[in-house]
Amino acid sequence: MSIADRGTEVLAMRAATEADVPALAALWHAGWQDGHAAVVPEGLLPHRDAASFAVRTRRHLGRIMLAERKGRLLGFYMLHDDELEQFYVAPQARGTGVAAELMKDAERAMAKVGAVRAWLACSVGNLRAARFYEKCGWQRMGVEPMELEVLEGSFTLDIWRYEKDLGGGG
Image (cartoon, rainbow, N blue to C red; front, side):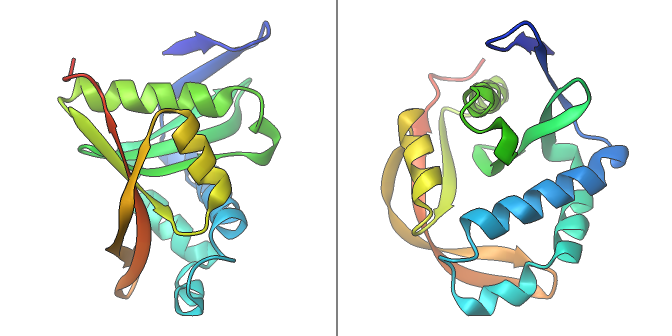
């Protein structure tokens, strides 16, 4: 599916493939370092090296949609039922409208599979992400513990839970 961006270039949305794994993992790792590393407990940091993002990207490849322009990766999201599990935008795409279009696409995809109320987890203290989610109509419901996937099991982290009504599926 393609959608027009603010200019004459087209922003393409498509399912990720095996060939996309290196670029997706690199974007995910860099974005995580930028948005999370300073606000999460130090004990999580060893579980978030570049190799772990490659493994996790490959593990969840069938649930990732990406946005690109002229073959250049600009962002991606990962869904799990009614959860927007991951959402990252490349630094060069911030402020261009790509994030808003990517979010609209994620919300449509969740509604299409029947999600009525979607949710996402935001690291406590990730203020840039929190502001974006709120601008998109997501509501912060509170703080709760969440078991994060790490290669050696799981890690418990307190997160801000956001929810949004999607209007009843598609």
